Image 1 (cartoon, one colour):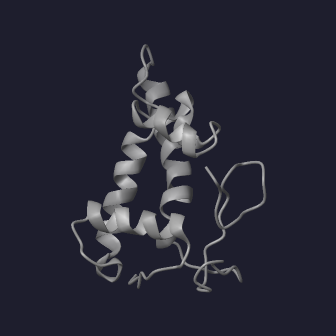
Image 2 (tube, rainbow, N blue to C red; image 1 turned 90 degrees about the horizontal axis):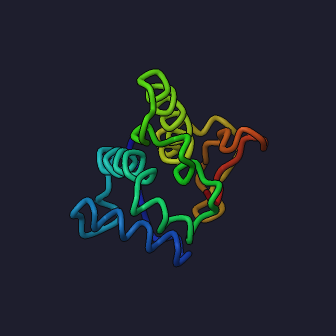
Image 3 (cartoon, rainbow, N blue to C red; image 1 turned 120 degrees about the horizontal axis):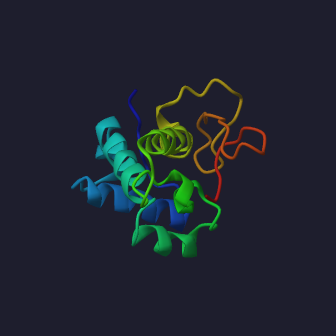
Length: 136
C-alpha cells in the first residue's frame, strides 16, 4: 500500500513525521514508504514498554498507555514462559491498533482530521468505541 506523506500544518504531527524521516535516513516526508513505517512501528512496539523510554513517554502520553503498563512487557522479572507469551500477544494486539493503522484499509467513513484522507477506525482501548486516534 503506497502512502504519500506530506506536511499537515500541525506542529506535533509534522515533528513526528520529521522524526520518522530522520530515523529512516530520508530527506523528505514524501520519501517515507511502507517499509519505513513498518520498521518504526516495530521499534516502538519492542522498545516503548522498556526503560528508559517507558518513563520518558509517560510525560508526553497518559500513564495508562498500553506501552507504559508492565502487563505488556514480556521481559519483566520472574515471568513464567506462558505469561511472557501472553504479554507478547497483548502487546502485539495493541501495538497493531496504535502503531499500524496506516497499514489497515480505511473501510469506514472516518477521515483524518489533518489531511482529509480516509482513516481506519479501530478499537484503541477495549473500553471505548473504535476510533481514529488516541493520546496513548
